[in-house]
Image (spheres, rainbow, N blue to C red):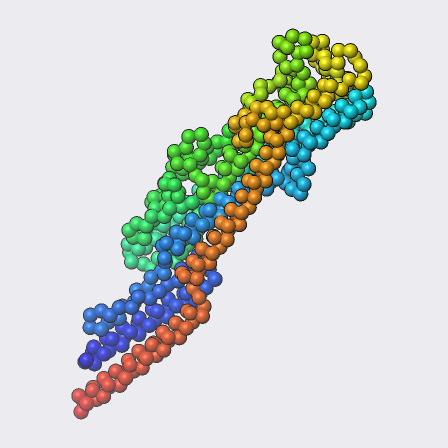
Length: 489
């Protein structure tokens, strides 16, 4: 090897060592940064012994994609859990004392006590107050459900706003990356920033990231809706100010395509967005329907029937609603009836009603509906029949999501069981998905993040190599000096 070749190799090695040292210093600075991906040096020997050092990000795509997916799954599960918890807290998390099943049991007991002492005004008054408590609690629970749907709708709007903001940031940084790559600039830090933006987006909705030339990317939802391709695509959602019994929340649109609603092309089911839609449009709607069915069935159970010819329609008894005195059809959902169920004013002493009509019948003023035809103060057959009816099989609407043929008591218990099972499943899923996400993110940091001890160890090796190259360069300089002095002589 000539001195010229040796000089070329030494200077090349020295430059390569300096480049590696700079890279390792960046790695050390990136320790603890969750968005920083470790840089690795790829060293190769070129023509005439020149050393080339390429700096690359140490990315394992399979682990990265798994980490992104786990973020979406965990955010989805946590959102669903929080939505169910909010409902459970309103019912009474310890003993479910405010649950329809519990209140229905209290109401049945009050009917039985009134039947046992039909001539005692205090038992009929106690029955009315128990019924008032039942109706008011059902009203309040229904309001809580509607409020929960409104909260979920607000969470959807918040998630959409965040996604649109992040997509705007993604467009800016991605343009810088593509331009920088084409002009052969170092864009690795910018790619880290872009990955941090994508990581935030993955909590809002599941992502599918497609790499393209010049470090460009295309971003879709996990189910295939376009969110970003050169430019950010619009995500639109119109919040609903308030929810009523028949309110259907507005749909989500991604790049003009419906992603929620009755007939979405590709529904969003992942991330915080998917969880909020599940709470708003599925879980709380089911609970809403169940409360409506409990209210409808109670009104039907206490309704009065024609005792003469049996041809007249059933009329509201102790309980009525906005559609009273008619009694809603069994097995047919009556949206909002749980919000309007109340004590019938005609038997309510607070409204000038006669509480004895609970025992005797004829509440609505029609003599054909009187049960106690003799007017006896000890008459209790109708009250005992009412108490027994709590356990009679009746029909319920399929939209409630529970068995359609069972007793009112069993239906209310099934509703509570459904809520408990949904809550338990949501908590289990949230715990599992959160732990899985944590494990993936820890694995991501372990495999692709910077470790201080490892980076410092490598930096010492590079420094020793740098010193060796510098010493070689110094030796070559001395040899050149000897050579030039010999030539002068």
